[in-house]
Image (cartoon, rainbow, N blue to C red; front, side, top):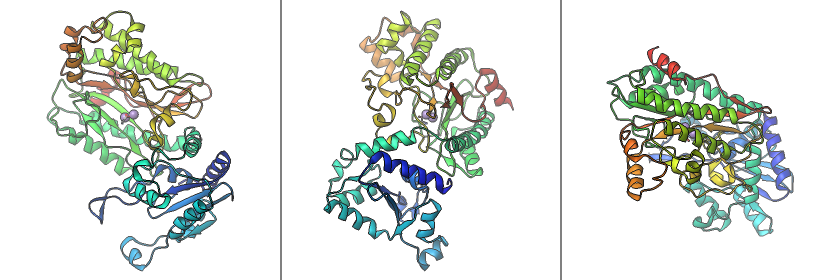
Length: 462
Ligand code: GLY
Ligand code: MN
Ligand code: MN
């Protein structure tokens, strides 16, 4: 948690940009795994964390732009909770910790909202992403659950995005603290990726390090020799020499800020010639993308530039052909690089995506493409100092996509299908770092994590 002044300032700015009305905040509640008392690791809602800093269930809050007040709602715990859970400060003291002078019992939240609705005052809420909170909002506002997302407040969403998308120095420090632990996780992963082990042994080592530093994982880890399957969350494959292990993991600092790093590691510690060739293309694309990050540049143009570098590299290997710019304009490179170059990062690993991907990554100025590949780009804004994004190109050999495209004779003028066929079974390579836009250019956040072929191989041997 930051000092109270940070939260006071954030809410003041929100009141100012909204101008009028009530802004509602609901804390996340505990989420049961298999019976009510056995819950998943608790994670506070990021909007609540950003504006109110407190990380526990049972809370709600209202920012009132007309009355210029902020109120925290919650109940002081009784003796039974104290016996099972331990003491907690009184609600009024918890409110003061984050600079809120008004507090009230939880039931008063609903009464206040109902009164505001009866008085015809604007009541703004953010799109709910948890079913239990959708039920609470639906009951309170009289909006059917199926309509809640569509009726969420565009003004509240925009005001929150505008504030949260530019990171302060203290936020950057938190993200860097998470990247620092990621480095330890990756050094250990590189050492652990030995033939005869299982993926879960590597992912267990990585998660253990996050926990041992008082952090958690920011998202379910991807640790897989099937890097061509992007969200592969099972970790039960045996590691064998000649496979590449894609490790995409992030740590979450106690403050909630995340890191999101990917390294692709040769099992046994040596890239073979083919792996090295593909890896060098991805690395060249990533380094050139990072170099291009500076204020005034649209991230979409950096994505397309990276796609051209990947296409050039694949042409050199005989896997693609034809004019590079034409191939990328047509979307042919998406056979190998079908995802976006990166996304915003902050309190959420895909920052603020609960507000809607386009609201965060596109805003009002840029239209999202519907072209396969480019459509998955989550960030297409003109860069400003304080933006933090991931830069994470990759090359993958996805048999199902290859078979489909070849059958359809898709992009035959750019893809050498017979040559690509020999790479099926390769898996994939992705390299991901977290990058801050600075006044003059950019900064890769956190201490360097081995990334060149030589450095990764060395870390594997450590
Ligand atoms: N970890 C998911 C991603 O890189 O976006
Ligand atoms: Mn990632
Ligand atoms: Mn990412």
